[in-house]
Image 1 (tube, helix red, strand yellow):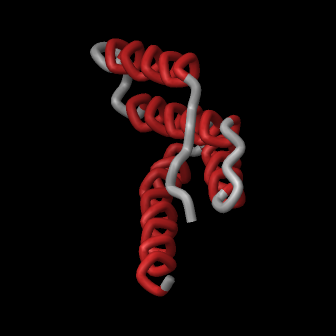
Image 2: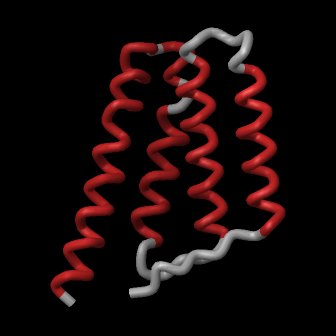
Length: 107
């Protein structure tokens, strides 16, 4: 299993621009927008990985991107649901990390 993923420099620059602009806006935006901005950045990162056409873990990246896109705007109409989504997402990612670590040790 290869861990190498390639994103283009232009994708990396676009994500960097988004992150740094988001940091600036956090100086005056409501607190809840910080998690929204991070979720959006995570979605952009997943999209950049998918653009690199991963083979072995494509299903994970598609699923996480879909979940991020489907839930990020809950910040507007369902803040408690958005907060729960933000709390749950790291568990799902940790589950993927654990699965990959187990695959490596059993191989």
